[in-house]
Amino acid sequence: MINKQNLWFLTLFSLIMVLSIYYLTMSDDALSTLNVNSDLSEETEVVVSSENDTLVALRVSLEEELLSRMNELEDILLSDVATLQEKNDAYEELQSLNQKESEKEAIIKLIKEQFKLDSVVQIDNLNITITIASTTHDATLANNIIRSVQELYDQDMYITVKFS
Image (cartoon, rainbow, N blue to C red; front, side):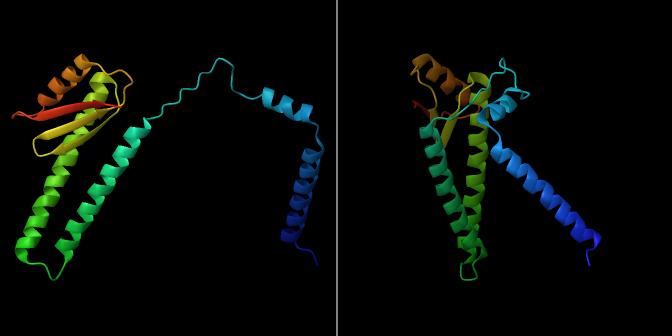
């Protein structure tokens, strides 16, 4: 005996089969007219923004190094074998890494807002290396970036700007 559920299944299956046969037998001209009537106008511009491959590779490698170091420190913190001093050192280094990351984000945001450029920032103690995605290697732009970044710090930092 056929119940309502089976009847609906057969009806929908038959409808899908008829539509698929109709689609397969349609000519190419009919299919092309379907695409012409789409909602996109010819005046619409599509802007594709892609980052420099060098910046992406550099960013990924730096993030991988950071994550591996953070995992090592977290393992030390969660270890039963580590001494109290080792755990304290690992905690302080983890805090330092987090602080450096927040400084990096602030610098990247500053460069993005002021100069409209994508960048990757590396911080090692007093050394800051900024890699900029730009085809022009402009010394005045580099000096302006260095001055803007130096304003974020009270002490003198050794700031290097590289273009890729």
